[in-house]
Image 1 (cartoon, rainbow over the protein chains, first blue to last red):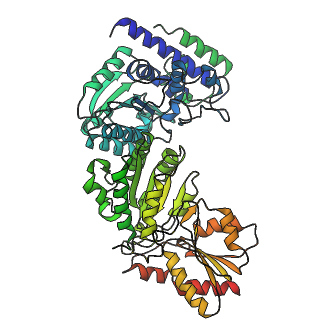
Image 2: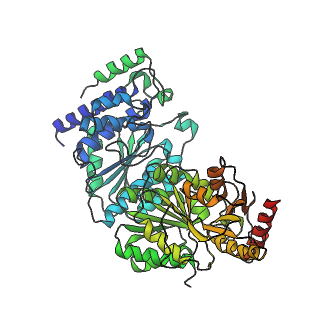
Image 3: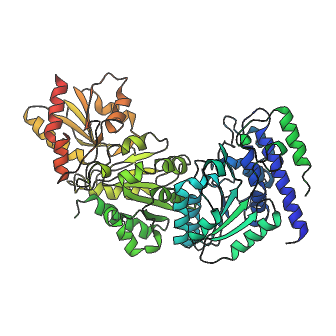
Length: 275
Length: 308
């Protein structure tokens, strides 16, 4: 991957982080932490890996993206707006009554592929899409971002088992491992142990990467595409709130509002990100 | 076994799958009972064994539907409707997807297995979900029609299928469309809205009452949601009382649905169903119907009591 492309993707990630702030605004609650931790992953998917076209959003051959940790959808909204699925001016109306941008993903939003946010369900939906693609002999691929807190949901392990049973090599789960659940540090609150080892045991091909290192993200996505017969899991070590100084590793910004001062600080922090 | 609803379902599912490539079936280790085995045997690539993991099965069906398939999700009613309630609500009903949830062995019809396998509140649960349609075929013939018609229907459907063979009350000419109940017999003293197995029980109750000079209108409430309000009101006019009969709890089922529509019409409604209690094991379905007062005589008794 040439450095210009990496730089371009980092720039897109920066735009996504700015878009997340557009969605959150001042004095309105929003899921800042998880959206920021996913931003680089989302940038790599939308602006590098996935074959999607905002002018033909329902193309049956398109790749699919599902935000199983649906509360982080702000990162997806920002990416979709940047791609032209809807005007960027919609971002500031996120969560308003009647908005196309709901608090959690819904298919009413152009570019959103499934209704998720009740944690644990998105990976199964991705399994269904991957099965459909196999049935139709299409080479489209399905990407699902799952939260590390979400891995406590039993249904996730049903989906992991199912994907392995059906040898869904067109399915990639990306674990946004930001090490925090809503109520605090996963290590202290409810730790399920070694995530990569667990996926390994269930028969998935796994990679563990720095989820904020664009080269590593891109490489892992490329390698996953070469895998045959096994579903792929990319465990991305991330920082909750990444890019916003006061929110990094601070679970109180899982879903919180920003004061005007905090909002301006966050804007400055993101503006300072070097790409 | 042309009077068995499960057989009729399984064979008709295969029939529509032969004609329509969008049709896929998912089953949670009960294909020999839900009768999706027929589809599996002939078109194995469109049958998905999902293991005993109903939550995943339902969400996978959502993914298949979002990719243009028409998935039929199969298990016993209690595991198809109640176990994955939230997956149905969030992933299927909210986006209004074309998934068909097929609850087999509904009501008390899985007699031997007892309360854990008897689904007496599935209608209540499914009825409370916006966008959900609920259909309970009255016999094998109507089961085939439900399966066929479901292909053209937009949105999720919960199809409730009895395990027992039931009397054949309809034929290929009997009209069926989702959202329209069917008048089975005319009468002017009482109107009975009955669903599934309780339609034939109501017909027997009618015979008893006719000997006593009462005439009974019987409606096959094959669609439980949405109920056609005008139809319910029309059928309920000019009678001494309205009775709803169902193999389901008296809480939240057909009787509740009818009474919700009639509550401002000053029409008296009597509910016949399973009182607020669980089922239990028995040697036969009939024995349970007797125990839980879902017999023709029990219906007669309730109607008579309502007169007084």
